[in-house]
Image 1 (spheres, helix red, strand yellow):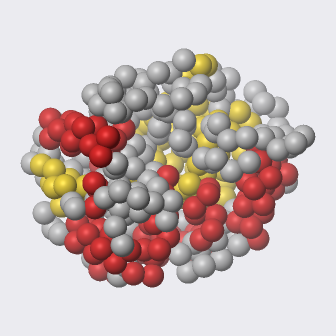
Image 2: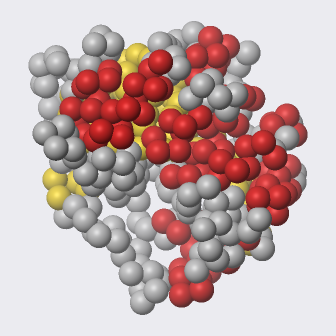
Length: 346
């Protein structure tokens, strides 16, 4: 079996906005509407669903969210679906989705955080590529030099084109922008310096150069899919990734002990059996008593004999890499530069 990619975005295509998890509260609607206008300014039509303005833990009942997501992903006029952001409980959609129908005419599903709860199973079960990157509310931000916006990746000119991204080696040390009072904010505050770090016991300055199919998501949500029909990474590797895998994980808020337990559960479920490297996000999540976030990665994965790279821009700490689940990637890291090159090949 091979990876299937949605066709590249073209000017005039429709971008669907639905909220499979959380909606946007009323005080932040101006940011939502501004973000939609930014997408229009890039040359696309925008179809705003009913769920994005729903309030509460989830934007609407599960059946309503599943139906709107399905409608957008199966409408031939909609070429990408970009939720406003993540949330908490997208897992309640998994048994309500017709995966074969979603894969019949692939459409880009874009986002991160709880959106990866749906993205990951879509790629694992069907071989359809999905795009872990900025969500709609992040789209107005200027993309830092070296990185790519989701719209740039989704509009890649041709199959096989190389999409190169390099770490800017700067990040936001704390806090979030005030969308209520500054709905048009467009510049990231990247006030701290920091590079990727090797955690695998090798010389920290030793270069990394590995390849594999990209797969991953938000640790707090996708780790709970391990051992279920929605998180069978080992089967995906056997069917779609003879080259092996590059597994990336976004750590949001779990403390180091919870992260360590999750990584062990994923390891027991075969998540890292075919991994050629594991990338772990930079995180503001707390350490444990005498046990750091980096310790959790070393404890669970340190004896795999593969590169373990931490503080990668694949999490909730800005800025964000745009990573295509299913793409063939080359990961390179050294003292002077850290980069990932993706090719959208079957």
